[in-house]
Length: 335
Image 1 (cartoon, rainbow, N blue to C red):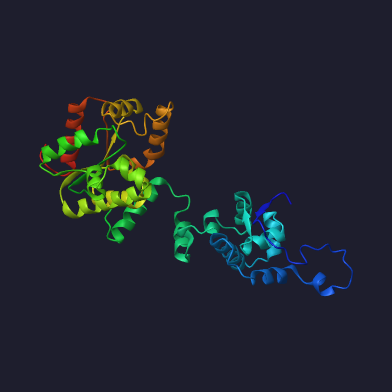
Image 2 (image 1 turned 30 degrees about the horizontal axis):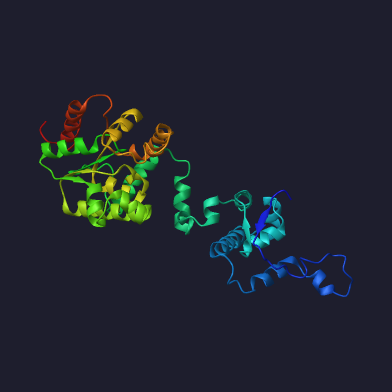
């Protein structure tokens, strides 16, 4: 077969698998015993040295095969993977390549996500929901997300809140325009990065250097949750990477009126450098390409905001005038 599995080093083969069929007839039982029995016997051996993920993966393969009513041989033929390789996969003995997993998923008529144990495939209800949403348009998925948020009492992106959250990459003008907007509305101004530093007792760069990105995201979520709890009215400038944590971003969409402040890559770069902040935009010779990659990767999430404003199209004061008009109209306040 063309497909291969990388086997765990030190794997001990059973006598039948490691022995040529041209042995003498002195061992008839070993030679005639079905492969299924041998695999079952292998599964009964102590598995303390097996990787837990591979063991769980094997259990899912067996479960999916049982649900489809397929023998191992049938899956082997459909996936173009040898029965021996498939047996090793099912009993957590082999570390399969991604291509082999794709072939097995195809044979079992399931998604790769279901095979590897994605949370959205962990129950029949999850699977039925996935099926309902499969191949739906972005507009349909948006309506579903809002409806689910309202059903679960977590709010919806269509609601207008007196908490104004400014989102976008560093250098878009969130701090400057946010402070101006807060002063105009008479709302508190919350710069979430400063609140994160208060919680951690050190700077953002120190949090990431000392504790890592995961710790920073936890501080970020905590700071946002406290701001939402304390301030029924506020202008909140969010960190550019907040959209990377979907749970935190959902909180913003559910509890705030959101405005995406956009800018051209060149303006982002110029403004950040003018602030004396070079991380990570000027950390390499490919800084502009890196910046464009970050923008491209986040744009689809930033675009979920209810409003957007291009701050590259005009200077600071005219940008503030447009933002002020936009927000006051949304809050039904006199212009």
